Image 1 (tube, rainbow over the protein chains, first blue to last red):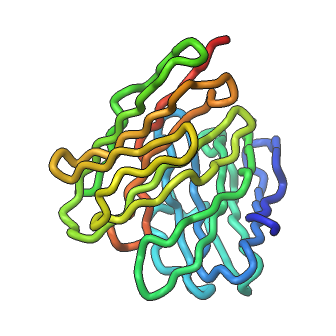
Image 2 (tube, chains in turn green, orange; image 1 turned 30 degrees about the horizontal axis):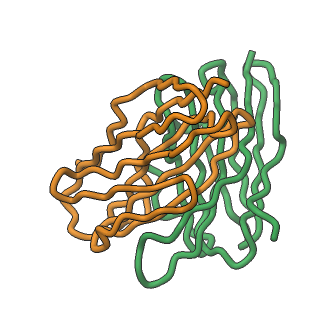
Length: 116
Length: 113
């Protein structure tokens, strides 16, 4: 079975450029998460969607970051304009949220972003 | 506040030794879930185990075992007879009922041949 698919795997871009990261969740999952991993801050939840609706975006750093989920099988995380401090690994993850909590969240392989 | 503490930043052992990774959590929720994830050098995050707060039974899966103790708010992970392929960063995580995983800082485990 296909897991969470992220693209690009690696991206190097210049400061000020727009960056778009893409994610395809596991088929049948109805919750999608974007996490960021840095050495200083570890793994941070940026935003999560349930049934394509953003539920909590309190982790989004600032207005330069935006995320969309136009349908159940696709999401994007956009940074515009990008800055060197945005350099990190961005993980997309998905789960099936049923009646109870504690559903296992499965992660993609990450998008390694370097802003120079 | 919801918090996960992995006090061991790095651990290095020789192959075949047993090693325990500590995880202490804080939450006021009575229902919560605990997880362990493995991040090998290739970078992906691999799910290892999920445990809910009402199930304190220890679990064993091959060389891996987990000890959940609510009395000390701990969910420790032991690898028996470690192997070089176990080298990775291991994350403990807490889901306090709102499907927002809170991760610890991770423990970097190095198994030397």
